[in-house]
Length: 453
Image 1 (cartoon, rainbow, N blue to C red):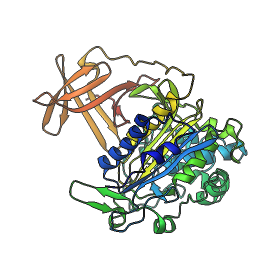
Image 2 (image 1 turned 135 degrees about the vertical axis):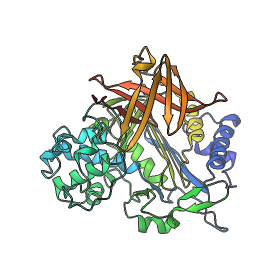
Image 3 (image 1 turned 180 degrees about the horizontal axis):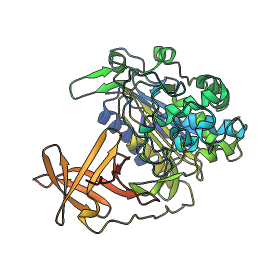
Image 4 (image 1 turned 30 degrees about the vertical axis):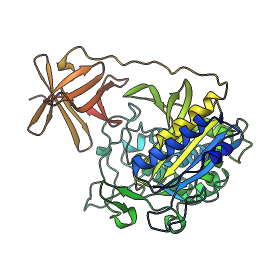
């Protein structure tokens, strides 16, 4: 078990922000211990910023599982897949501020070889996952690529019309990066270093995985019997880290974001405000919304920009409360290791010690259909389907030869097995045009039109 910092050490680190009672010290130390145990990560690092100060910057555990492995410090690089998206969104906004592109212009303006419907999508839609792109893997094709900008592009990748609904797609940011490169004639790595990573003071953050992995914490896929390093897995079949960063760099990033005047970095405050502005509601959580690369939630009544990533052998958690000027970031080296207990404990103690005005979450309940037949149909996202059947007043989920009864709970549907357990949940939503969707794991499946016989 990785060794925790002593309680006096934690108290000294938190003196600027937290009430240093024994209970407060113990709560945070216990939360870190429980999270590391829960995800079986060998190590983690945490950064907590309040106002203009980094009040906690600490490593926990060891870099590797090996005997004699060095301890984690705030300068040990950890990998991430999706934090890259947040930096890409910042880059796109910076380029718009420099009048080199427009977020609301059709991307066909910048890449004329895209299929017609794909070309109508905007960068803002790509960055907010509202482009209507499915989440299906790229299908191999023997045909000559239709587009050099995005070789996999066909109009069939659109499972619904652009701008209708938020639904994460593995293609959205890949296409956005291709458009940025096509528009500027430069690689994203160069642009990020010049306009985001460097100006934010993130001195160790890099897209060069080979260099970072030599000094970084290796990512692990942990099971009940083993911890396999990501380096031993097939990169063609598994998502690999795209970006490496450190807790110290994440502290600098949060200080830059939370500076009201923008004087904590060379990135204008307006850039961060644009990226953190809501674009679309989350269809399964209408009180929350999606900005550009980040989810907007409310934590104890405070608007909170949230990012969590649990892929590719790592876990990354980022929470920013701009109005309270509080931010926390935690990185760990096991798939799915979002150290939420530690984040909750630290934020609860900060908020308890500060008089912060709250902002109520917007309430936007969705209307539920009145009958089972209103839900019935085939819902699709790429090559994946959900089939709901109505039999009289009853609703069933068809999964192969299996038909499970579905109970309605507001806009949520629950498929029930024989012993009463919930086998699968679906959230029902409609877009502004009235089209129906089921939401599973945040991804939308659109109901298909009934074909006339």
